[in-house]
Length: 118
Image 1 (cartoon, one colour):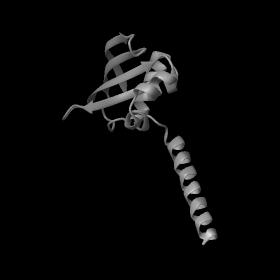
Image 2 (cartoon, helix red, strand yellow; image 1 turned 90 degrees about the horizontal axis):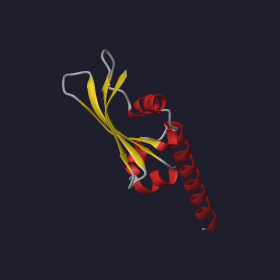
Image 3 (cartoon, rainbow, N blue to C red; image 1 turned 120 degrees about the vertical axis):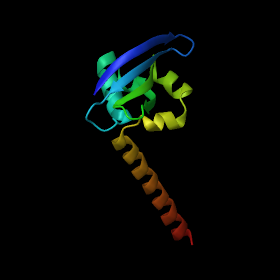
Image 4 (spheres, rainbow, N blue to C red; image 1 turned 60 degrees about the vertical axis):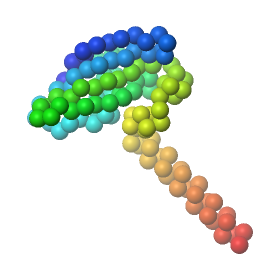
């Protein structure tokens, strides 16, 4: 997988850098957003929690995709501006699984408390 930067634009209003790029993945499956994010973090020399891959659009019949990413100045700016579904796409699987387990444990505790009251 190779990444070629097309445009890099500074957006001072939102305290972020907006990046448009091509991903070449000849002989491979379309890369996952988290794989692209890891590669971008290495290429841009930034922290993983400050970068968000907004979208990746594969080209029909070609091993190439057009992508759009944003690098924020602070985590607070990122969480305030970005929508929940974009943040969820960029979340590590292990973190999401931990949150799911915590939610399930809380739900089972609530059910147990309700049954104890009855």
